[in-house]
Length: 311
Length: 288
Figure 1 (cartoon, chains in turn orange, yellow):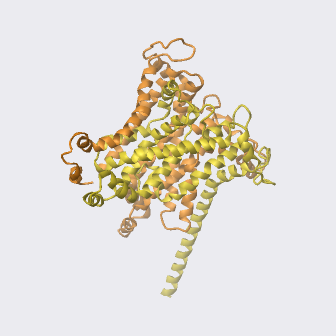
Figure 2 (tube, rainbow over the protein chains, first blue to last red; figure 1 turned 120 degrees about the vertical axis):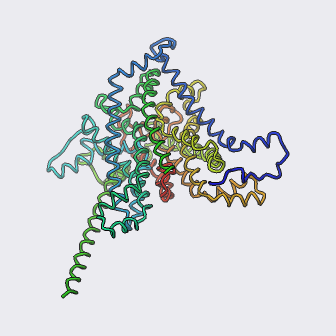
Figure 3 (spheres, each protein chain N blue to C red; figure 1 turned 180 degrees about the vertical axis):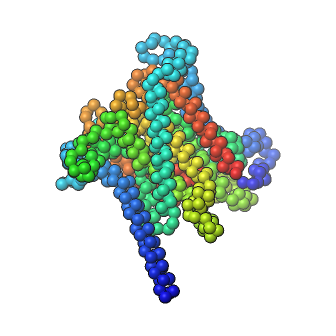
């Protein structure tokens, strides 16, 4: 892509035709991007602007009309304990989940860097969770965690020697644990596959050369492998973080936000406010606050991507 | 004597290597078991006798496997095979739409640098925004034009939802194709669109197929939009699965059948593009 585009604008048959055709030719790039932009503006950006409008009104079933209330909805949300509980829940799942997924994913990827029999099959098996419908993953694990009919309690029972009936999903702490294990199951393979792709692009001679120069395996890992795959690590962690922030499906299926409201994520809380209580204004305000937080992370992410491209 | 020591060293060296390899395989087998077990369990639940899943201790393999739930899945809940049909219609249509729109835009962005990096980053940031932020305003908009619970609204949403991903992926594949190939086609009298369709796209075909597969998987597995925009007609597979935990009690067998039916299509097409997987997961930025 080093050449400027006009070098290849060869269109002898159109020279001098003038009018629309020439104009279209001059703006062909924009014209080709336009349909996409229309869809994205209409279905993506316009609702967002609409949402800002809704957040300034009071739009809910019990209140007649849609009176303008200014920033009152934002104030309501910011002082709402439920909103901040949901924020905390989301943060816990994102931070713990992504961290554990990263370290296990990296460990697995390192195990498979060298040529080993059955590598392709192993990779294929680990692709399966990533492709599954999250609702189905949630449903499957809900059965696995079941206090009486679930195999997890049964297996624990084999080890402790008597029947175990932990009801995992009805206590806050165990419910968190169950959710994180479920997330771990579905998304560790994501980390693994991406990091493995990064690791296989590292030239093995680099490490060998370092070891000849007297570096230990550990040193060559920290000083050579990690710096080389740093961009891949960044991409993997950022994408996973942004995806995990949206967590909704498995909470919907596994705990329904319970016990109480303790495992409500932001997306789930906003879903309930909107779809069950029809408090559109509070939903809009809550979404916008959440959006600002996510946008901050994205702008950080974009900066990282740009740095990576530059360097 | 010296040779003897050497021999011993070699032997212990090889032994250590063997032990290391064994340990590595043991870990890998444990990992495989962990990741396959839930899939095994849900599949077995689908073929258990009704009520056999309410058994203590849990049954690992049904005494008489049955397909009865594959029938009852249509007659209970919202109708499993209808959901499957809906999912196919919506997913295939939106994938086709997003590939057509996205490949044209990606080509322009790769070749003419339309919009430059700024446009590319605006597009990708839309992908990263939480969908919960637009789902309700979009719902209110669509209610005004009476599009809730229709195929077209789901197709439109999934097309929008996948556009950023498809544009980024395809752009990364198109950029890799040398400009010279196209130039010679243009010199030979090919039009710009002709060069795009006859020269560039066939060369980028493996990447385009992988991209389409990913768009397909994203639409197939999406739940939030599906659950909000469906009422009684246009419910997709994930909505159907969630529906078996309704007020009618918990229909484990039926939900398990739906789970199995939801896995089969994506597993097949996903494994077919294994080589492109890491790249797809990272929106084209990590080349596997």
